[in-house]
Length: 302
Image (cartoon, rainbow, N blue to C red; front, side, top):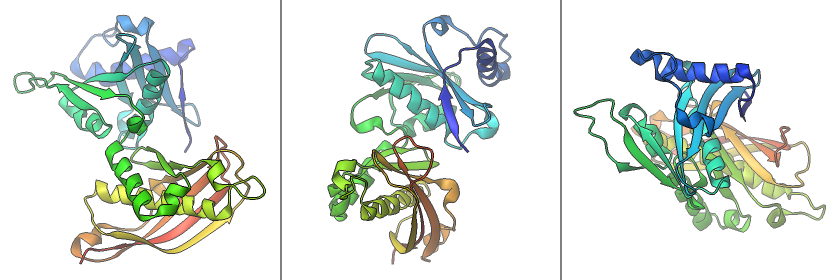
């Protein structure tokens, strides 16, 4: 499924936007219609996440408190679609917008119910609320925008994974492979073309294979961390279909929905076999330049 981040512009888009905000954030608390809006709506930046059919998935707003501080508010994902990485997509779009407008940090106010999500996205508690006396009180969270934390979800895990690759698999550093983004449901790697070019001025086939393999590997590693599973990942078998040349900006993308197999047996000392798939793209093209399928084994700790 393809998703897009758009800016609401039409009367109907804004009606849907505010309706979702009210239905999730105000109606459950018996607040009157109109309470879902505030004075910053006129000057804020509004974003909507929609699917390929234009159906509304989630919304969020960004406004500036100063020239260097932006604030995210009214982050909402359709209740039946929560836990699928949509909140990370929205937050990523809002953080990119904040960076583009010169923000040095982003703040968010969060109740206990959403605190865990924002902590996983690299935010830190700046001012803790007294939720004992007031369960609805909001914590003040902050995230400083620097080159390290452009990764929205589990940034420290991604940085550690990249560092491990560069130390243990030197070709990954020579290729310039970098973790671009992780949402919990998708994992994306990127590499500069000039480091991986062939005599036809396109990406070298061996580099494509390596990028594709590590894209799957990275998703498996991060999912193991999510499940608190130890063990070593090895590639047992790999197959790649080269469909068109990569001439510009190589990127590898792997989806959790394509990851098949049960890794929970590793807890009991059993090896796990997983089937994974990754797609290689040329820049923003929606057509895959190569498709990799691999059989991976998680070797249980002995």
